[in-house]
Length: 521
Image (cartoon, rainbow, N blue to C red; front, side, top):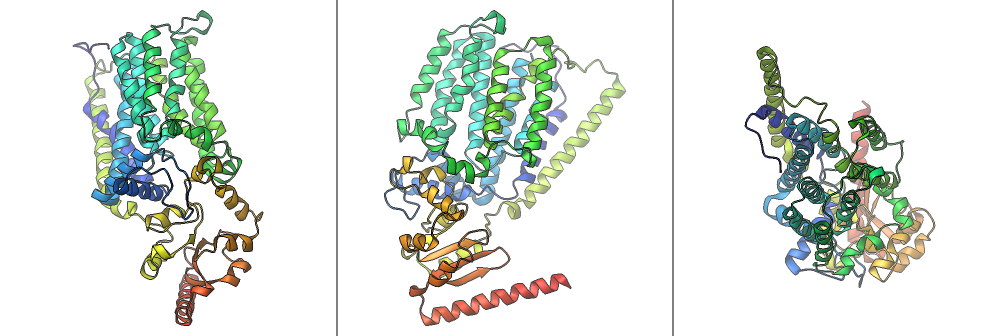
């Protein structure tokens, strides 16, 4: 690495404070509720910590479903943190991960900008606030972002110095990622591929050209160590059997292709437009081929699915540190005293505001990050009345993880890939759900097949006001404000229970009417 010179300009500490704290402030603002996937992640982690790794799913009502818990280590970490520190622990985990994402972005920018500190801080800041606004959530991807940036940093160090000692980190990062979040393990090699191409000296492509043998050996070892996990090759091939299913792409929002109709699509359009402009018009046409490959490849992933834009954001910003390194001023020490005093004062003010906002939001955080769900009261009622061992419950795709968290075994949950026959080796349950919700499946036959004891349905569910449901099931609890109903099979209700349920239902409806009338007045 390039050693720091004695007279090298270093920005004031206030710039570091402002640009590192502000993304954390944004994280607190955006993390108003923990991501819905946290419910099944905590359930997976709790089971693994208490009982060990499993190969047959123990969380859903279906028996004998083969499963690969591709994020077993992430789920375990989430559960241990939650078990020890509660909701605030999960929030701190997200904040800490985001800090390290900022740090890795900064280190990469410093390296490729030849230590242009201010430029590196600004690019880090712009990248992270874009990432934070959409993708910094309580999911395993927050670990993957750190590791993937670590891979980029290692490869940039090697390309710059050709010192093979840095490549030792590639297998280590691969091993960790394979166990934390195997579905993104292949991204390590997709990110590495542009560096492999750039290692060859190809004149018309303006490639870099550096020693290839150590790089190839490190990549091979990194590939092999990925198979050191509880599920072997099944973990590594998980992504190929889990994505591409047409029903998943029709039903799950984050897997939908790019659309200009939503805010994320508009934001990404502006982002890649501005970045493309920088790529095209700066550095006088001398663009590193690997940066162009990373830009084009991850942009393609973004157009394929909204989820893919996270990788585009991750790798498309930092090359601008290379483009602008000779344009953006590196040394501000020549400014006159008044200008420097003004800039320092402004930075101190912004830093103070950021720090105060961070502390304020942190003190308010418990109410923001408390594990809540719109069906909270329904499940509280379930816990009081029914033993999980006596219940076979229908719940929708998004609510299944919440049901699992309470110890009940639902019909389905957000682990969409588990419910594909090619993965579980038994039934295409996800396809069945899709057909049910789109009126391509007979409701009566569906209910007869599973003979559920209970149905937890939201007003958007096809079963909510269905006549076949009302013939066989009775409403025992309803929250008209959140739109959730809990049904129980008729033959399981005693006369006394039916009367109690009718009274509860009537009281809930009357209360909702009163509140509505008060609002109208």
